[in-house]
Length: 339
Ligand code: ADP
Ligand code: MG
Image (cartoon, rainbow, N blue to C red; front, side):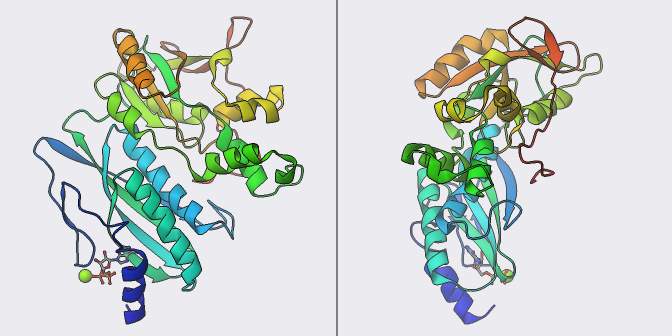
């Protein structure tokens, strides 16, 4: 690597705001490897996500927001396992050295790294089409990670926060015909922008749900699709669990309720991706404690349905009859997904 690129790394990445001391980190960036020392009785949780220009974000996206989004979606995976953030590595492919862009990217990353106490451990910087890969590392007490396998018939299904906001944001942010950002109030604009670029990793919720939730994941592809992962992972020799979702309980935000036509609300809230809320199953004997724990965090935590013995996901509307979901992995704007 050219000297100029080492200088670039020093200036924008191995900064005090991004690379800070934290128990468990013996050595950060600068050597051939970083060194971690796990406290006794803990396990290392690891996950990686890539964002590619034109696939996961539009060209010209703000660098700071992009940095935030990339780290946040990775932190969301740690949250979904009940793991506490420790550090991350960053592989960055850049078409050119744009100092203004790098400054914004570095600041966005540092804001998020500090907020979640997740320190930059190292990385790789190369030239090529803009692509950002982050790998996060987190700690979880041995045996206590929240896994997708573990849901049983009779468990309640809960989600954190509200669903569908990121799916609603995409057509506005990409300026699709009929979705005019300027027609929205400043507060609406800010809320849609944040829904996409600043998904909130439910770190504290994941940690609080250790020992209470029977299964968990973060919703990246839409609940209709992601809940199936829990059901499939939780399938035993004698039972293939399914789920009944109560349509009236599906939590949506005020801006979503206002902007999305009634008939499109459920398909979008259950099928739209990128929410990064947690979906968890909770056995009846732990429900009260789980609700209290999430309430103590000031976090919306909604019981939207139940794990049942019949397979597949059913939706129960106001008439009381469960019917098979009339959509799955719904994409409002007709692409083939973005994963
Ligand atoms: P090597 O050739 O040994 O793989 P590199 O030349 O790729 O090492 O990187 C030198 C050091 O700089 C390593 O410690 C690496 O982790 C770190 N580094 C490279 N790119 C980044 C980056 N974008 N952010 C943080 N650290 C980085
Ligand atoms: Mg080396």
